[in-house]
Length: 197
Image (cartoon, rainbow, N blue to C red):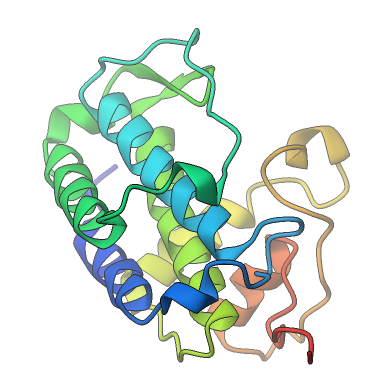
């Protein structure tokens, strides 16, 4: 990899979306099937920790991600998310994080792949969180490019390759904004909005 992606812009957008969450939003649905806003925030907290450890090469394939649940959110979840995002960004700024092999989510994978997955997770879940809580989301161009490169590399017609990662591809016009195409390839409807009460 000639240029190491910087996770700070996409982490900042996640931070902004989280700051816009109200306490009464925590039970609201999200574009992630069967996951509430609170569940999604717990998932993001967990993935920040898991991928920080992946960058530091301190995780193992024996570590599997916990089931996301709003019940696990600490009282100061915004402050905790800030701290974990800062640590995640710092860990992936070390060029060594992108080299060799590491582990995340119970799988062994190259460091470069793990860093790309971490960035893509923040991109997609930042959008999920913003959409679920009625906020605008504008992805930074560099992160969206990395996200597109990643999601377009996962075979659209191979359920096994997509299992646990993305849902079925959602058709999006070829002339649509790049972020919309990233969303479609990840199994999300770019025009998703919360169901009416």
